[in-house]
Image 1 (cartoon, rainbow, N blue to C red):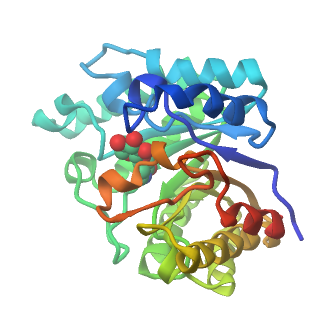
Image 2 (cartoon, protein in one colour):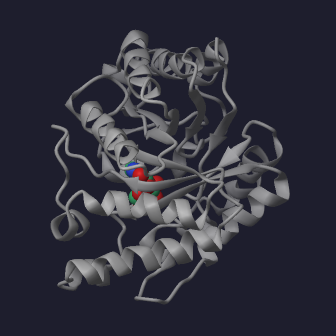
Length: 317
Ligand code: XIL
């Protein structure tokens, strides 16, 4: 058993939580998030994204991200930072302009220099590039890829390495939790960077999984080892396991097994260093808004009782 360095939960700043109407739950939520000792690490689920930190070119705003950073510091939690270059939740001005390659390179360098510079010393790791791949392992079309090709990935990591030499630099994506064409694509990115002499320290497996059709323990282990054998660490960065609502004894048991498998795989592979859930309280999950009919993906129900999956994780640790 290799063991984990941390178990964490992402959290949103109150201004950006998914569902309003839960103001009365905040006190109990904050108690679990910050004071209970359940979590040793956190990430702002939205506050460090391009849309919020550089809404206009050269205009930086760290207000939302700082709410989480300050609470993490106050309560002694480590922070994983998310995400520097991503096609989604991108400020409209980046997509709406027709850039020359030279101009877009400058936009990327300026963004990373400001944002990673601002948080320098406060991030255990940065998700430098998020979700660059299609399911078949080819590169996703985005303003970055369309103008610069895979060079944008090199530029992003190169710049982040200069700006924050101590933060671990991660490539982060979903559907990397069992071997597939997409995991091969992510391995290709790791090799491309290493061959170019550019630092990459880790691959983040977002781990947005499905209770009713989850991979096996062995599939998870194989996927994780596919990365660690390239000399990078692995973390489960956004773990949640959604089910068809309403929750019932059957799908909650499937969810428990799924959480146990994936956390257990990370615990068992040397080089898989940590697990973070993408929030812990069902009403604040992103899942119901994006996957209609699915939900109850986290570890605490609306009434703050725990899912059976909580015990599944304890069994895996
Ligand atoms: C989600 C947030 O949780 C939501 O609040 C937001 O509306 C959309 O983004 N992959 C990622 C995360 O890398 O940043 C996403 O977070 C979930 C999918």
